[in-house]
Image (cartoon, rainbow, N blue to C red):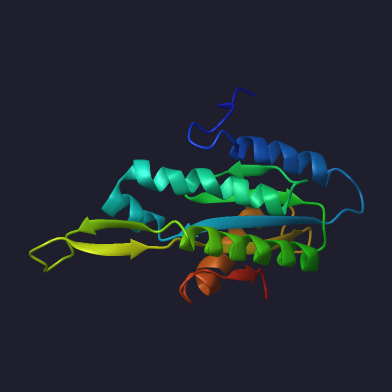
Length: 177
């Protein structure tokens, strides 16, 4: 198939390639595959207030952080502010890795706050606003939570928005957990 090779901002392979990798792993017998979905909290607000150029700097840093925690798993960009990876580990190990990613992003991005004047609604003059981005993570396990990549990503996405995002983000959630 002729998919775009790489994402222009991050250099990562895109979702069609994730599909191919999942299919390769799923053909193996007796293997657990943890699917980790990672979404940047607050990126839309940063885009609106600071522009895509500044927000893209955060997008470029996320895969580096993920790779430092999960050096044996390839990171894929699957949406504007969403990343995913497949891990041949059990759910407990995957959850521990997701929590390490969440903590690393929180620490790294708290040290890189944007501080630029913005005009808030109802305000006559610009004011300085600090932005500190975090990530929400959701985990699904093959084949327990789905037998296709799309079903696993959908289950993880639903868990993320029903739990992590509803509670303010910066959390790790498990499908059915």
